[in-house]
Amino acid sequence: QVQLVESGGGSVRTGGSLTLSCTASGFTYSRYCMGWFRQPPGKEREGVAAIGSVENTNYADSVKGRFTIPRDNAKNMLYLQMSSLKTEDTAVYYCATWYNGVLERGQGTQVTVS
Image (tube, rainbow, N blue to C red):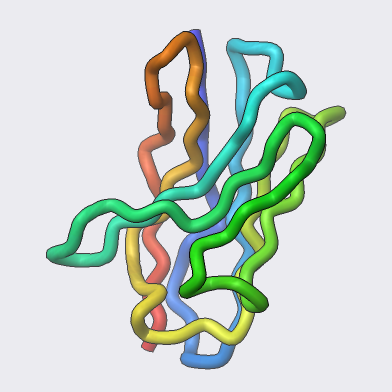
């Protein structure tokens, strides 16, 4: 059973930094593409960043140059390092992976930038 548990959210000032973590279990983590989505208040969910099994990365234009998405396959961990945060980065952030054709995600962690 795939389990993804996010942590590290919180409140931060504009221009500040924050790192989110995701602990993965229940699947062979190193073989799967992982990603972060977010859902701003009152808006639809949007992709933020993704990293493949060979650590190729992809970022939404809105976060390029500010966010990075490293992974630690030895620890089954995914991170989202966020810097130069803006108020529009306020959202619930979800860790996710496509597993057997199903988008699996965690419960989310709130990030508030003010």
